[in-house]
Image 1 (tube, rainbow, N blue to C red):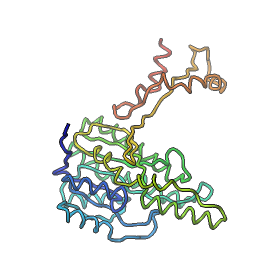
Image 2: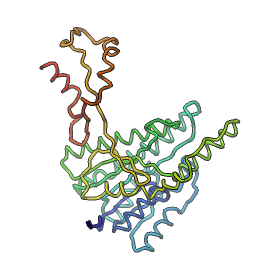
Image 3: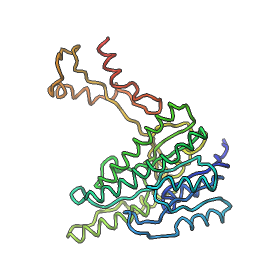
Image 4: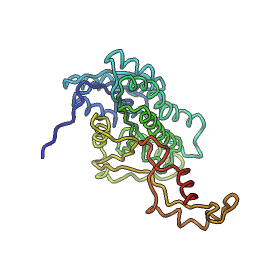
Length: 330
C-alpha cells in the first residue's frame, strides 16, 4: 500500500553540527523534501580543537543548492545561539525545526579528565543546546509551533567518557523540561531525543586517538567491531527518525528513541513497584536502611510499576507523592 511522502515545504530547519556525519545526512534528507536548511558547523575537530574544515558548511550548502534545494551556511558556535537564530530569522523569517546535533568528545578516562576538559565538553554539548533553544523559544511561542530534536548518545548507558556521557544525559533533561513548558502553554511544540549509533568521523577519530594513547603507554589497541557491522552503521541510517520527529504530523512528545543501522526503538523510564516504609507498615519514625535491604525484591519488580512521562504536563505518572498519599489513605 502506497503512502504519501512526508514533505517539509515552506518550513525552515536549523541543524547544528550539520557539516559532517549525522548532521550532514539530516540536512540532505530534509532539504530533499522541500525544507530550507541552516547548516551550522564551525568545522572544528571532534574534541573541540582548532578548525579542520573551515568551509564545511559552505560545501554542503553548495551541494544542496546544486540539487535544487535552499540552504544557508552558519559558522557561529552553538554557545552563541542568539547569533545563529538571528541569522536564520534575517534570511528566512522563521524557524520551524531545530535539530540539536552539535557535540564534542574528549578521550580522557575519569582519572585523566581535567576540569578544563569537562567544562569544554559541557559548554558545547549542554550549554550550547541551552543557548540555541533559549534563543529560538520565543520564535516557537510566537509561531505557536515548533519541532525540536535533541541528540543524546549510547554513552549515557556507561562509557569511559564521563563528561560526554553527563552532557548527553543532560540533553534529555532539557528536552523533557521544554516539553513540560510547551504542554502548559498548549502550543504545538514537540521536543524529543534520539540516541544515534553510527560510525561517524567523530567515532573514528576518537577511537584512533584512544588507541594511539594506549600504544604510547605500552597497552594493546582496543578491538573495533567487525567491518561488516561497521559497514551497516552509516550515519544516513539514523536520519529517518530525526526527520519524522521534525515533521508537523508527528505527535511524539518527550520521547527518547534509539536509531542506527536501520534499527529504531523507543526507550521509556520505568518505575518499579513501590516499596513503602510508612506508619501503615509499622514504621513510626523515619525509615531505616534495613527497610530498604529487606525490600529489595519489591524494588526489583518492574512488572507492577509504571512509566513517568514529562509529555503529559505532570511531574510523573503519577508522581511519587501522589502514590505515597494514595497508599496511606487506603
